[in-house]
Image (tube, rainbow over all chains, first blue to last red; front, top):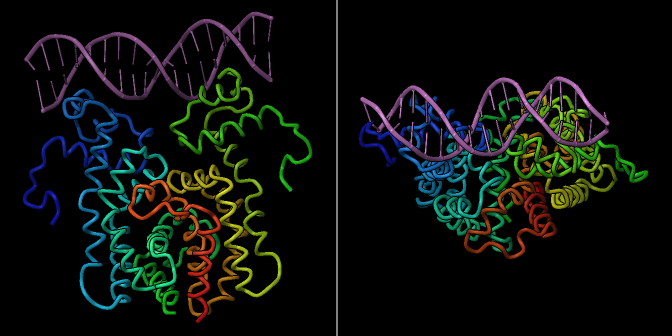
Length: 200
Length: 200
DNA sequence: GTCTATAGCCTGATAGAC
DNA sequence: GTCTATCAGGCTATAGAC
């Protein structure tokens, strides 16, 4: 299913990207230098420019690579049959697990929402969110007839994402930190909230 | 109510912060140079170092300044009387308006969640979120007895915030962009979702 | 309290050998 | 395809005059 599932064959251009992705996720575009990436890969800074013409191109390629196949992963839980509620539960569970398993993707997503220019936001929209968003909107339509389906789809994603996004500050708030970071707990909470809200 | 409400008197140190805040909100810590800030204020770069010992100190002071009195603004809607549902509606409406009216605060919050070190996250927790979070948790307890109150409080905030956070990418998704950015529309949607979810 | 000038380092990017 | 060496410029931060 994955892009490089066949063998461990990975050319240098891909190795560069897979080393750059966690750096950009942790420190952002301006917080990572070409030398940082080169050091991580284990080559000289000059060698990077044989594979990518400049830093911006490397970054865009890294985003393209990090976002590849994510749409399928998000949508897959919505493909199977079952009632609307069952598909909602599968989607929330799968989406939560995906975010928990790939913190780099989550961080890059948040960073692009803050810093992305039009080209990169279009990439994010077309490559990652278009199909899942359509499927989620359709599910939302089946769930709640009198509530805006687009907004409900956004709310579904936001509910899951913010429990991860807020984790760094929750650890310093009183009463937090009792399993509220576990994906199963988050998914169950969000499912409970949403199924009650849509169950007329 | 506000910090500098008495007169337009503002010393240079404060003028520096109020000019630095929108820059840091737009471009992040690593994306803003001391020269950028100096240029915005209209003084030389060296003059900044008379007021702040280094860039990090200036940044922390800017965060402290940007976050000042935000706790009161968030909590105020929860102070008055009325039923739990009425207070929920007031809180969501007020919180949504606050986020819509202060995009710099929203961006800085998101950036701190991504990049904040322990010191800054503690500042955010103590200065901004501790009191509102406690009040929101109490409200959540009154609303839903069998649902974790802390998680419901996080969900309330996340629902509102993600509708703003996702706006940059929503504009490139099909079917978006029909008033879904207006604070009144967002607040109404979130209130509808939450009141249904908690109305056993 | 602000200025000009500058130190010392890091940055993105290039030249040319191998 | 990778290296070393390097350029031109930006960076934080400081020195010292006014």
